[in-house]
Image 1 (spheres, rainbow over the protein chains, first blue to last red):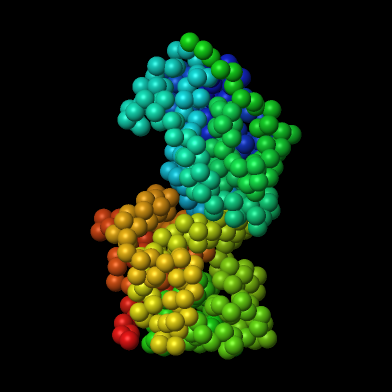
Image 2 (cartoon, each protein chain N blue to C red):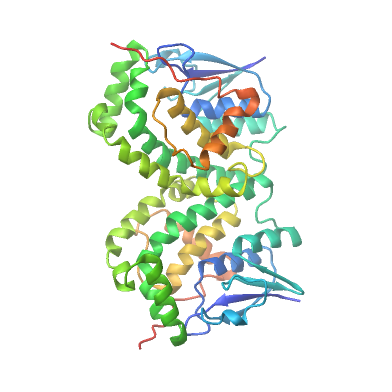
Length: 233
Length: 233
């Protein structure tokens, strides 16, 4: 039986952009596990199987329900050990570091670039929830969150330096072949790519080569997902 | 035959503070390899065995000479595979990321806190070289490099967030047990600790618990190295 993931969708059912859901999607492809996805919206918390934290991804594997992208990656590694996502305990440890780096350094900067574009592509019923929750978090209107994005993108590019240096020395963050740390960081880029036409990287950034490698993996799984349609209200 | 490392020393032969040499020292202890060190000063480039880049660490293992701390860690792992420093290719890859994060985000901030204190503990003959090369790099006098350190330390603490979050979830950056990524980041802390009495971490920072764990490893190898004496000229 295929795995099933509750996956955040925009107004268009096919518009899937959650950075944490993309981690799981890439990880399942890495292991060659078929994955079905269910389009889910922020305001459909009651539709999620339990246990959940009211957020996606939630993975359903037969009778087993796992939430939180990091826990899902651990679950996949334990339940389906072939084609390791990590490989050993030290690699799990350092991938956890890269997860926190992505979530606490990189994704907050990307948010300050794409957040209003994300909002503009959401389902009508999600828009008020998203605006309220994000404006509470940033303590300002969405339009003000992103108003300095020409400056923020320079800070983002600077913050990406450790990843840039790494992929100048080896093809993937994880080494010669992609693994969990790549899917984690790529999730952040795929989020921006599917939700905004704002380009995060300078044209000559070595990270573009890495990003293209990631887009082409698994027969272009990520590349086939395009920028979602803009929903005007 | 014991391994030998050329190791940066201050005015006092016993004052060893190079972050990159500390990586190697901890890695050898991790593998249970006896390591002899030779006190070396910045102005003694001609004393280094070849190949070298005029910098330490340089490791000598019989007829083999290896320079650059990252290459030395790879060499140790290949030549002495027991007690792995990494474990698999993905862990090497993600440790490389943490190396670049330490070198390009963390160490430049620590430099802007401790650099003048490092200088004050150097051998007389090294002081001019160190001041000139660092003032060229920072484009200002050492005294000005560190003049904002009360502000810089706040930026450092913020930048350390991915490591902080990681060690709140597991005992070491590498997971349940210490490995290469820990020695790499710890090298930066040991550099500051042996060269300056300026405290990098707030009293309630969870990273203090991790740093203490690192200091206590291998019978307190790192803890026995104290702040070097101040050399007045």
